[in-house]
Length: 187
Ligand SMILES: [Fe+2]
Ligand SMILES: [Fe+2]
Image (cartoon, rainbow, N blue to C red; front, side):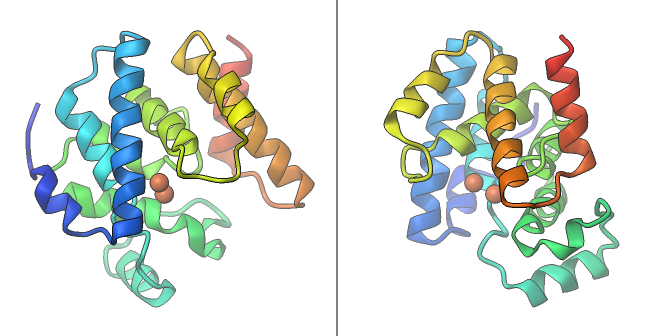
C-alpha cells in the first residue's frame, strides 16, 4: 500500500462545492468498508473519495487536449459525452501522481461501471451515487438502497436505476455498464 499524495494536496484541486461532495463520498466509502466488512485500505478509500472528480471542473477543451496528449483509450461513443471524460482523465492524473492500480481502476470506472472496477470501485460507485448532497435521489429511495445487504447488491440496484433512467432518456448504455449489470444479475 502506498501513500502517493496526501489528502490536503488532493483537496487543493477542488472547489468548495466539489470538496463537499468529495468529503461526503470519502465518509460514505469508509462507512461501506466497515458496514460490509470489506477490509479495503483506509488510504485507498480516502484517495478515491477525494480524488475521483479531480478533473470534473475541467472544460471540454482541456479534457480533450489531455486525452489526446496522453493517448487515453476511450470506449466507443464515450468521447461524445463530455460529462464522462473526467473519469478517464482523473484516473490518468492519479496514476501520474503515483496512485496504485486499484485506485486508478476505481476512478476510471466510477461513471460507467465495469467488471474491472474491483471492490474499491464498487464502494466508490455506490458512495458517489448516495452522497446526501445530491438531489436526484429521494430520502426514501436512499434509505432503501442503504438497506442492501452486500456491496454487490447495492451496486446492482444503482446500476438498474441508472440503466432505467438512461433507457427512458433514450441515452446510450455503454458496453462495460451492460457487462457489469449482466455479471451482477447472473450471480
Ligand atoms: Fe465523477
Ligand atoms: Fe463524484
